[in-house]
Image 1 (tube, one colour):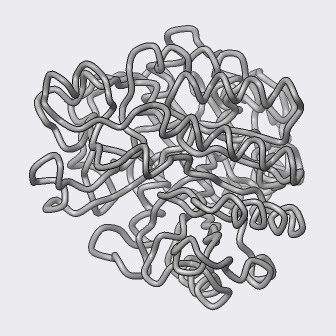
Image 2 (cartoon, rainbow, N blue to C red):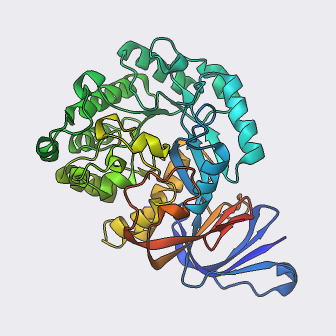
Image 3 (cartoon, rainbow, N blue to C red):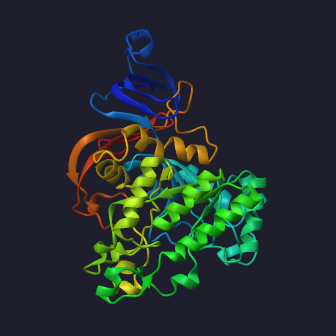
Length: 434
């Protein structure tokens, strides 16, 4: 069945197109894209599904480089099926799943399991990320070559850094050999210690142990130098400090192959949100100070940080309904990324609509060397349609994710995903999964 998207504002950073267009989808691909509108009824067909997109943004399907699907091993938090449904409701057509499952994604057998499970149960594209070391123990490299053949999109130690610099350098060498980016969680565990939030004024007021910014900055500096040495592509995950931004600028000036992502919570919230001991504000890296948030926004505006990723981290209610010190790190983010981005970045003039769209489409696609992230004729019809003016309050009870651990419940936002189209198939319409 054909789908005709009428009179939407097409925003496509891959072609720098921003204009009112009609799009015709057939057999999972974009068949026509016309700024003058479609009028040939014979070409459109009588049984064509019509989406009136007037007043809406029609953009390439969103891509999230940093998602925790928890399966296998932690299905009580999330599954490939429910995680993909959350992605669809959030406008994402492609998500990359992190390897901290049980067992860890550290060999080709688990990679194949993820791919087969996703093919059967997921409603969006799921790309597995392989672990850098076996069992994420940080002692011996995983079977990177075999995982590359099986179809991983990147390698990462996920929620921890590879402490052994020599081993990390070797991993980067393998990453370059197999054309895989290295997704790095940058944190020195010795400096982080037993901290549970940012080491700032709020930690002192609340009497909690803090994590200094240097814990991130030191590891960012090390990995940038290793990337320069090996020529590998380093992608810094969930950047959170001004110091890391400064180091990233240095790397860009030296033309080192480094990119970085930021999560919506790190440009929306500060350490002040922890006041009240809401465990939904506990995450890794922690919420930082106001100067860090401002530095991150400036880096987004300057294109120094190219990607917005969610670090979607679902947890069971009991893992958050406890003392702050004992609570699990992380929040769900797939279903709040669009409104937070539009509200905090576009509406405030920090990013243009085109620049914001690029951070979750074209730029992630470039990092993965993927043909996705475009609305060109002949390409796969992965498309997201957004009403940028819709105003509402975030309601976690309506999330498709199994977990509801979000600090944004009740927050007033602007920008709502209306349709998510994957390979020409409408998987979410008007907020409802199909």
